Length: 188
Image (tube, rainbow, N blue to C red; front, top):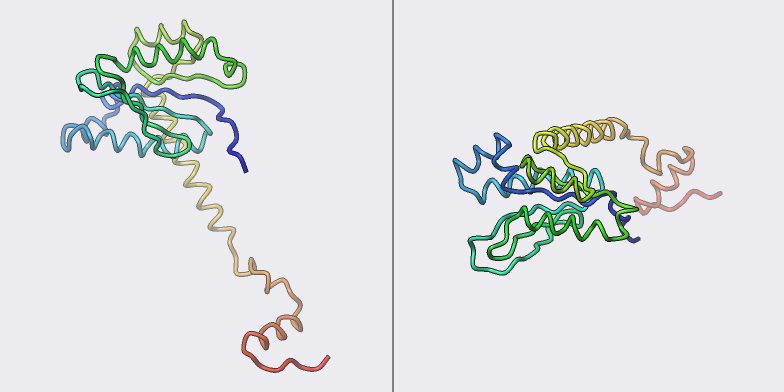
């Protein structure tokens, strides 16, 4: 079955979010930038799947002498590393510019998560929606809570009567038990 079209394309300014979320700041300061990136990715995997977003976390690679790349983590989340001498801001702006002339804009939202004020004004000018990093944090936490609540409800609904054999009449259950044990069936 083909995957449904994503409701939105969510572009996340990765280092901007790491600098804004206290738990990611702590991870960065204590264990390094790679640990903070991993935590951000883990936080957004469930959020993206829950909302049906095509999420791209954009990280600057402007000081690395490497070409840009895109790493697919899940069907709903990928990581984009910018080209040498390209910032995450310029990558996001270019994506917004291209999206503006794309027909997908009539079927899909474009959301940019950043707290950079200049970036906010630019992406809104291209017709994208803007989400602050703190709003993203709140929404990620709410999504995780909803998923946990739904899992608890599903777990409570499970009962011993959920098996097919429990819906059979007693005579049929007895015949089924005899078959399982290899005993001869009673005559009809």
